Image 1: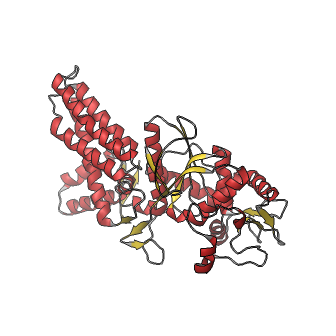
Image 2: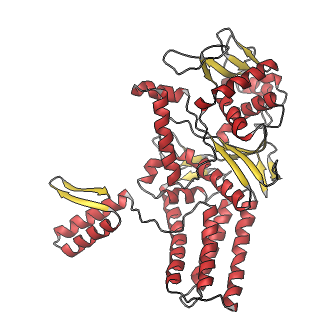
Length: 468
């Protein structure tokens, strides 16, 4: 299995620190609002990486944090007249709902930054004892960036070059020894959450949080650290500097980063009006469609989101689900008994699609090619499965399709739940039928919706509906 390592800028054979086990850390969201589809990409991509590693027999300790103390959370809390803890708790729960909708497996651990303060204080003290950190006059603790000789090895940036050509990234402060030193601990401001420390009452720097949570749940050395490519510098670069200076060991063996997500070929931003939350997408599409769309391109490639591409993903997913449904239908009427010799030969032939799927995933988790292999298996099943087949043949073919889709996190069983937009469309059709005095069709629509758990209520203000 080969993984493209951002650190070396090349594909490397994956060799875990401990045979049969994988320690994996994925940077999670800052919880101050509903997650957007940019947040969704790493969640889906690295959940799929995890699923494939588990399919290959690895025991995966998968840790993904929630950043629950941050300027954005504090600002949201002030704006709404609530505590930062209330804001973060609300949006952690909302995030978990969205993750469940996208069929993202819960992590082995979902640590919260606010629950790891003790470990953060301990790491700062270690860094200070080793001369990598210092306290400024106001109580801020900074990391001495230039003291770490390998700083820049992940982002392939050189501090001297940055100083000469990218002055805008520097934060100049009179208390800093160097403009590139970054914050490990900062003093509290009025109305902000804070914790006591030997240096001042305050809170941790963002970079420190992930270093400590990874250490707590995975140890000093981990196999894979992952996140969006926007985190390479300075976040992941700073994590390396802190962790390796404090622990005296290589922090992560492999660094994986997914590419950016654009909206209609433009960068997603609220100012452009092309900012979509996962919850907003769910109003139009089943989140399985969003997941399938995200896996339609290689994770390192930039991905363009558009209505047209989502419709294409919806149609592609429907092909797979329909094929699985057809196999289940044939199973219901199939003959009992073992496979015939001809069926055994056919089943063995279908193994070529599994081999293609695995070859794609072994090559830096190329889900685009893996999806192509699934489509080949779908075509094979549609062409070769009939009501005349033995139960064993149909069961094994279905199991093969279900397994490959399961690695991708794609559910092949058709969901019974109906989308809000579809409900509204059926209600409109029912109203039109009643207007035309086609009461048979109107009653049929009501019964269809009721069967899906949707209850209609005719009122003077119009038709109201609710889920049972």
